[in-house]
Amino acid sequence: MRQKPDLSFWKLWNLSFGFFGVQIAYALQSANISRIFRTLGADPHSLSFFWILPPLMGILVQPIVGTLSDKTWTRFGRRIPYLFVGALVAVAIMCLLPNAGSFGMAVGAALIFGLIALMLLDTSINMAMQPFKMLVGDMVNEKQKTKAYSIQSFLCNAGSVIGFLFPFIFTAIGLSNVAPEGVVPDSVIWSFYIGAAILILCVIYTSVKVKEWNPQEYREYNPVAEEKEVSANWITLLKNAPSTFWKVGLVQFFCWAGMLYMWTYVVDAVSETVWGTIDPTTDAYQEAANWTGVLYAIQAMGSVVWATILPRFSNTKLAYSVSLVLGGLGFLLIPFIHDMYGQIVPFLLIGCGWAAMLAMPFTFVTNALQGYGHMGAYLGLFNGTICVPQIVAALLGGIILSLVGSHQSSMMLVAGVFFLIGSVCVFVIQEKKAS
View 1: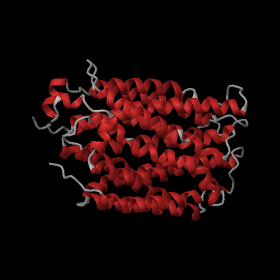
View 2: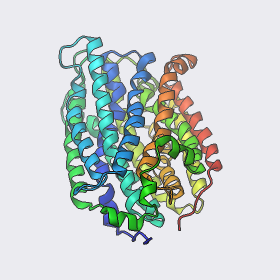
View 3: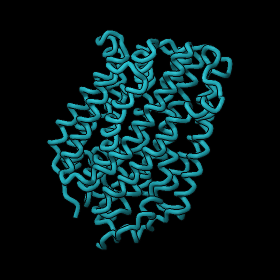
View 4: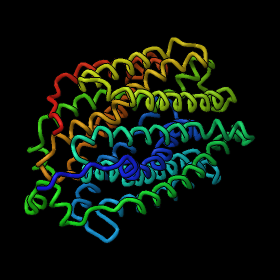
């Protein structure tokens, strides 16, 4: 077996550049879905149910994309065809979803339309997102994987900053941030339009710049016999998965459950804590929603900075755990800061945890998977450690919200506790050192 060559910075950059556009789409979804559905008329106690679809589609789509792309060899590549098709579908849906309240439908019909559009959007985003992780697993050697995933994390957070700021920026330049009851404001609609255009341009760039290995080259660089690659089903793969796969998954459970509660309730939490309202028909609520987008962007910028610090830790597990502690403290602070600018501090801390969540799990797992084969299938299955906790959290969201007094800001305390538990679970991981 040949050693995978060291790749230049720009080759590592090109492998992940399309992720910038995908992440703009994902950021627009994350920051605006609760806002859209609350505007359409959804009740806060049922709001978390709308968040079941994104992780549910992820847990279905990503293993399928991973498994199929493991067996796909075309003139356009192995992973890139799935990336390109997913991006095209995402672009179409991004032009429809924010218009759910603009077609003259009743509240129930508008919510159902939005729900179907959200399902299709998340399916396509997952289809476009997963190939980037697989490309790194396929083509980057172990000693460069941390660097490759750090670049991916940087692009991810840079795309997030753009996506999160779009409604705020478009409001500042004159687009309306208010609309008739049940209709999504123009500032949000145009954010999705521009995000869709950037997404397809970024994906085209990666598709043109990256040349995947052909089957012969792939076998030369990856230590797995061809018959082993085609023999196992998902259940067999999970039974044979290295223990690191499951131990990292335990950490993932608490972290992603916490993030789900952030995405679901943070607009209402900030509006409630700083503006004193959770009524989506008010100007104050829409202003709070725009400011939450700015806070999301600050979180992403904090992640970019923290991602440059993470490689300086000599102990990777310590870096992971410390990052999650900082993120947990950020969540715990949100309900107690009543100044809009003061909210910057907790979101910077949350960014530290987010940076570690994006980069470190895949470093641990892809190193542990060397020699196992089925890299795409395993990374697709590992996505279950992102999706399952979100599904569980979404199902329990209304119950937990009632238990904490129906205050959305209290859900940030729940998220913070989850992150602190995850930080402790990091130390059960047995790290395989890169060669």
